Image 1: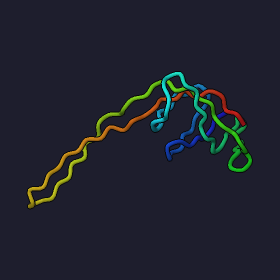
Image 2 (image 1 turned 120 degrees about the vertical axis):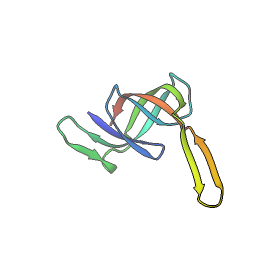
Image 3 (image 1 turned 60 degrees about the vertical axis):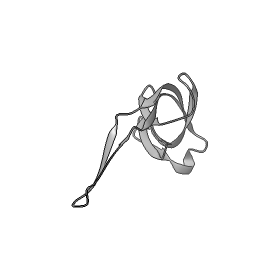
Image 4 (image 1 turned 90 degrees about the vertical axis):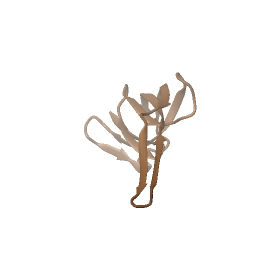
Length: 102
């Protein structure tokens, strides 16, 4: 069984046992989290979505938190001697997916 979860404004397709890297979540390693469920794909290929789910959630455990690789942003305007370099590192949380509760 697979599920589509939503967190941090993004959606992820996960199955029990997967480790997924999502936007920063509050909590330390080993903390249990409940992720919002958008749809479930059963083993027969049947899709259950929307109002049919009710209060369905996906239980997960925080494995690690950190920051991703640096992304460089370079701004430049020709003939004006304007150059600016900025770096950004996005914070993330790795979550190990546990039970899909329907």
